[in-house]
Length: 194
Image 1 (cartoon, one colour):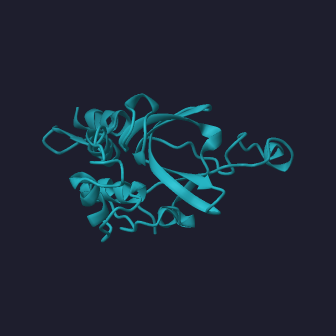
Image 2 (spheres, one colour; image 1 turned 45 degrees about the horizontal axis):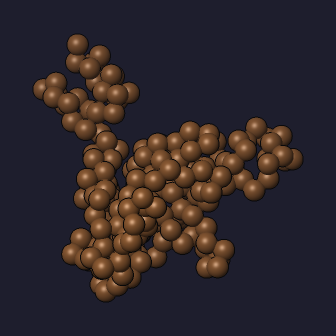
């Protein structure tokens, strides 16, 4: 019975301890943490407010700064997951953590190698992975957040230092629906790397 529960747990998103008690997996725990942050709003719409400062403090920053990567590091830290503790968004996308990289070619060599329309790697992002958006004006990844769900067309995200068209003025933490083709890179911080 214990083996069956343990096997089911590993596929169902939780771990079963020796006493048969279900313990959330790292990804499930991380998802609960970042989901609880949905609805946090800036005080005056200028990257401010008590919770925003807590995000920035997680990466040793303070003031009215962009905080999307600070939010990601804050949540990873709360989940007990190693992270760069860095407010610079590109720091969340080192080569060894990448699991998905946008393929600019929609045909040709990439297609002949069996790669998906958008992905240069053969991994599908899952809950708790970190996505990055490329900002042409910065010539680098300029925004990030968490992948909550993913299919071939849409990525449902939870991200900070953004807005929701329906929410009006002010920014904060929101769940958003983004086209997969707008995602630049995805990194996995939950899985342990060497």
